[in-house]
Length: 465
Image 1 (cartoon, rainbow, N blue to C red):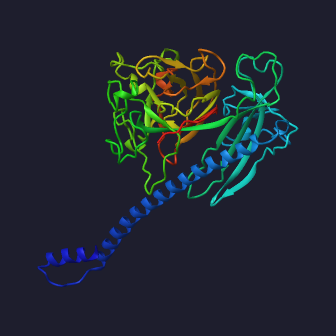
Image 2 (image 1 turned 30 degrees about the vertical axis):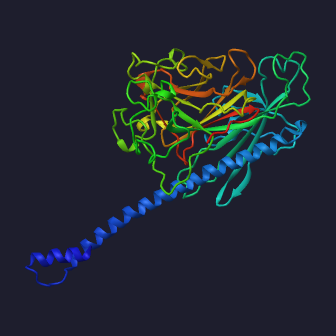
Image 3 (image 1 turned 120 degrees about the horizontal axis):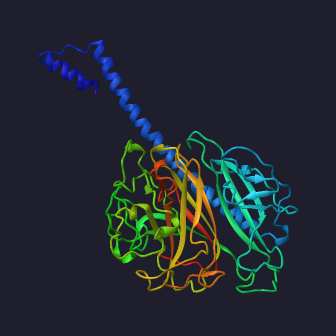
């Protein structure tokens, strides 16, 4: 760079080798320093993204290990040695404690359940370290409500909640919100007098984790951005149709995106893409990342479980409602059932850091075998589940947790997923006051921001390529 400056000076002076002045050396030095700062900034960003991805994967492993150890305990020992006390702080799990009750809906105040004492579990916080990732574990055990009337004779159903909170570190950037895992545990000795469905304890409950991807469901497995027709940023997918419709943008019904049983892989570069470049207006394009979900109608009026076959009369409907489905359940999972408990973990923030309240709605449904373009069956008796925050997270990507308890609206009890059927998830933003905000942003299919759903199941989990 200095040589280039010298050559230009020499050319200006007719080719004479006159050397460099002090001013020219300083200018060349400034240019070199500015360029180096840009390179160092990119290296720092890549380092932070890699460390965040490592944190996410390790936390998933820690939470799964803790839950497996809890479920291996005798049922009588499933309780807390000492009750936790309420503490303050939005990122403190104990802020959800109210007296002897705990809010299983992540502080929304809508799911307070009595905690169980007299057990062998330490409530925490208990420090942990895996490689260079450090944090604390919190544990809670509560009495849960039983589906149907299977527990009318007593309290035979408990819920364990395990929370992992990371220590603040410079490589990880700002403080990350804690992650949690919930699971139901049934008394194996329960013998209710009224038993309309499977007997409590009739099968081992296995968590089934499914990650939200940016690959349409006509594919047999997720693709990387380089493998997809779209590279990086792209138009919003229309997910209102059948998988056979393949990738579509605009008001043409297309394939939903995939739900997949593996986390996004780590890579040398993990850029955050914009999954809806057609949604605006954009005041600051640098803040436009992930999928933007526009404010829709009232959630009760949204066509969440329908399979569209023609363009919608509302040409923005596909921008207000987004869907994901699994591949067809494999033939080896003939006994797969959902127990009726699920937890959606979603990375989100407001659009362009706007400060406004938001209520999101979440649907779970089954597309029965051979009904990809016709009938779908909602799983919950209340039609949909809601989650609200006021204001919605606006200072950066934040992980929220939506707890769901449901039953088969068709037959009650556990939900069977026969071979050939698909499990589906739909997401929209309720129309509370459209003037307050234009919707939300969500991020997924990224190792640092791995939005996912966990469902409690019995039977054999499906296998896909």
